[in-house]
Each structure stands twice: as structure tokens, then as C-alpha cells.
Image 1 (cartoon, helix red, strand yellow):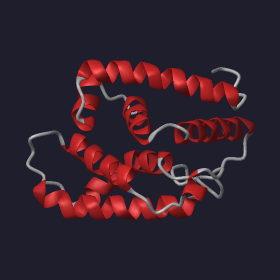
Image 2 (cartoon, rainbow, N blue to C red; image 1 turned 90 degrees about the horizontal axis):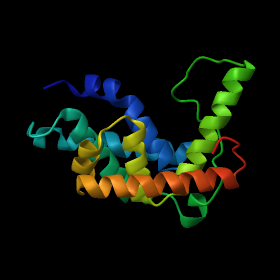
Image 3 (cartoon, rainbow, N blue to C red; image 1 turned 180 degrees about the vertical axis):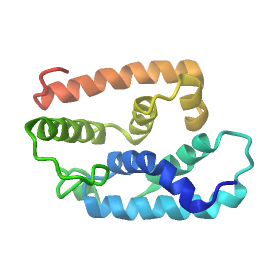
Length: 168
């Protein structure tokens, strides 16, 4: 079994994406991220290796995010604010980097408008998980995963069009 620090180092991008998709403000992200770490740490001794470690991490993190209720209804509907640049620590002020960051902001904003289960499913898909892995993590059938994913993609396209994203 890997030690806790190496697990967190390896899965930080996953935890970041999940936390970012379930919160609107950096302070809420910090609270949720900390809660995900606590839940993973407390649950690590219960990991039975029946599933891959990555599947188990996703399941614990998503369940934590789905039940996370720190934010009030008001803050859940707020526009994301603050500095979200947790992944890319290097400052890059180029036009291309700014455009990329704006596109990422718009995508997260659109994902935040989805229902919690829909957010979880699209995040797993964006991570490159196969339908059977998504089904296993979410506790649904593989065929149901495909149907839900198609509906979620259509919903995201509508949200992005409404927000003025020209490629949606």
C-alpha cells in the first residue's frame, strides 16, 4: 500500500477537478479539498484492493463532494470568484494562456450548473474513464452510463451556448 502523501501527490489533479466542479469559490474549494483528504485518510485502512486504487479514490472523493454542504444556496448560485490557479503554479500572461484559462473558467462554470450526479459523471468522462469504470464508481449500469453521458453532453452544450461559447 502506498503511503498517504504519495497517494495525494498522485491524485491531486483528480481531487482538484472534483473540488473545483463542486464549489464556486476558492474558500469553499479549500474546505472541500480538506474534507476529501480527511475522508481518504480515514478510509484508507478500509481499502480492500477489490477495485483499483484510482477507482476507490474517485469514489471516496466524489461521495465526499456529493455530500459536501458547506456552501449556502446563495453561494452555490454565485459566479466563481478569486484566484483558481491551483494547478498551474507558473504565471503565464500570454494571450493563448489567458484564452485557455477563460475557456477553462467557462467550462467549470457550465459544469457547476449541472446536478451533482451529472457533474460526477462528466468529470469521470473528462478524466478518460471508460463507461464500465464510470458505472462502477457511480453504482449504475454501463448502459445507463452511456445514456446519462449523452444527455449531460447535450445539456452542457446548451449551457455553453447560453454563455456565449462559440464552439458549443
